[in-house]
Image (cartoon, rainbow, N blue to C red; front, side, top):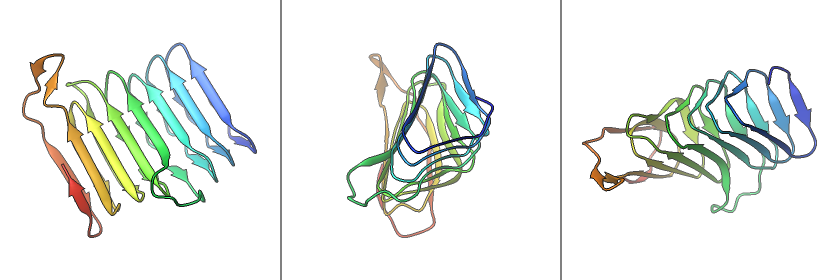
Length: 169
């Protein structure tokens, strides 16, 4: 997708192959991007009052992903990022009000944020290494100890925090 897009309603894009997001996409409602391949690009993704969902074999976005003004309840998932067979790499990070959930599957992949993950609650479920920077007051990182019945080799988990946080690793 190579055009700036602004919508007052939900935006849902699904592809049967790789999805390249190279332009800014804004909505006052939900943003959903699903790919049977990888999701990559430089896009800035923003919603005023919705959720953002990204699901592909791998997710590599260098732009900022943000939910700007959703009602705080501390339980809702504002942003969900899922990689079913690869890595999650976030260049400028994530800003959300409630919860951010990252699900990474693949022992050869990893979860990496070059920018800060900012939300009330950040949850990371991974099969690979984790290297994130966060300002969330609650951070939960879970790395699978076994994958398909086989022990998952020793993993490295690095969490840098810009504030006092409660960690569960």
